Length: 147
Image 1 (cartoon, one colour):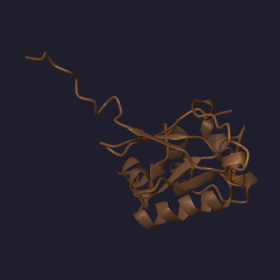
Image 2 (tube, one colour):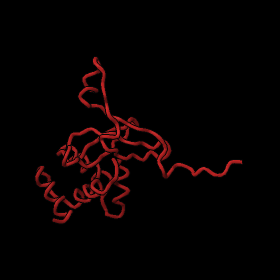
Image 3 (cartoon, rainbow, N blue to C red):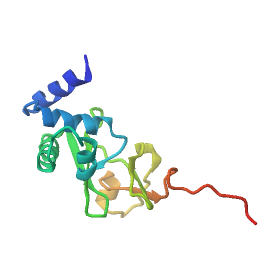
Image 4 (spheres, one colour):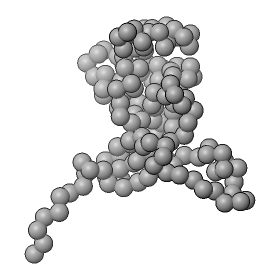
């Protein structure tokens, strides 16, 4: 089964029409290595003739239907990622680059919690957002010879 047919089927299963813009937005989310801001999706679709409002409306529709997740990583920018078929509601950590702002999903096992007795229920249930911040490989400057 091709990915385009798979996307159409995923949309139909949740009661959404498989419109050209919606398929394009879902394709961008499917191909992303991490969560994308609205502006990132608009940029990825540059030249496809899909306006910013249509992109945002489709991101919201995909989120409401459970095909995408929306998160705010503390900078007041909503980022979207495709929902995992295996673990649709599983929380997982993100790496956020302090230099360029790139966000990358990390495997859930990257961060493990061992909450002590008396810890907040959200922490014990794993219902927390975890961010690992640093400088990504692209932004790290190579160390030159000292002297």
